[in-house]
Length: 384
Image (cartoon, rainbow, N blue to C red; front, top):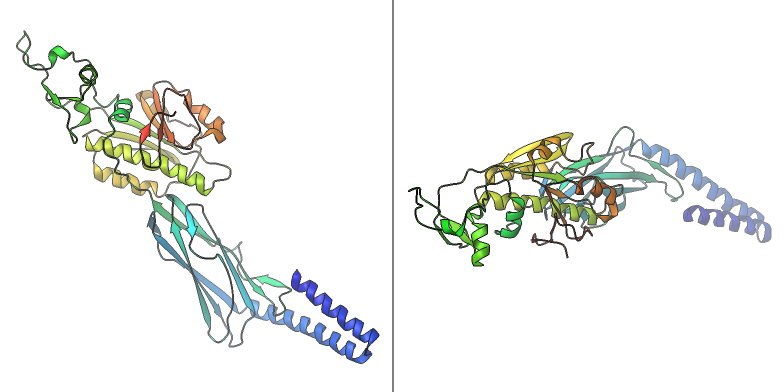
């Protein structure tokens, strides 16, 4: 617009010269200006058919913190220097741009020019980089035409970002709360602490807990009496799988902060699974992608496989917020990214009985008996 206003100002100056100073001189200047505009537009139409582009991403799968390089190669099919070409990129909030996203350049002596834009992966899940526009400007900068046809080409390049598996160590309180279906048994009395009963059947022998011991063998009732964690030395318990549900509802306008909060929930779930695996406990995890899917986590390899699955993940609000199979199992643990800004989404599930909910530290909820908070350092605690 400013170039067009400047051009009209030049025409007005030429008209003023023709009227007030020199008629022939002013007319000559006006003709030159009009001819320049016509020539500029004709060359614009000519070069529009001579410009092509090719884009590529350096990687399709990233870890958080990795750098993604997106290259755009602009080619010309003529030896003539072209007017300016303006290219602009857009990207999902899981990425941060390391440089600018708008580039303007002319293809002069070379037959092509290459633009490389670095992006940093900051949040996990399915992300993208998109060519927002590629426009060819005329020499006067007044008019432009699109080189990129968004109808024929999407210009959207998907990129998967792996969530991390945080090493949080063992956090007994949250494990006790969330592992009610995983073989914890607090029914032993202190009298069964050692030795053999009157029937000749061996009782439970105990010792003081040391870091690295399986949390599933803590005798919580005895520990509460002695005010110190006590470990059973009996035979291995029969272990039932703990059931988790990953609830990541979609938002109307997802932001970088929303993606960071979602990341805390997803990586908190992976941290919990890792804690349980380290204690020899199995878990079933439900997540939604096209439909409710369930994966069984028995060992570290299963967690790595689930981590890869989550790199495909995008926020979605399923028709059935909690799968019926999970509800029927009883005692589920739901990791949810719903917050007070989307209270209607949270209210749909927070009333579920016999469930524990884990949300991110910025969720804004407090005072709920069945709610735990996962901090950005992956410490699980009750909300204040």
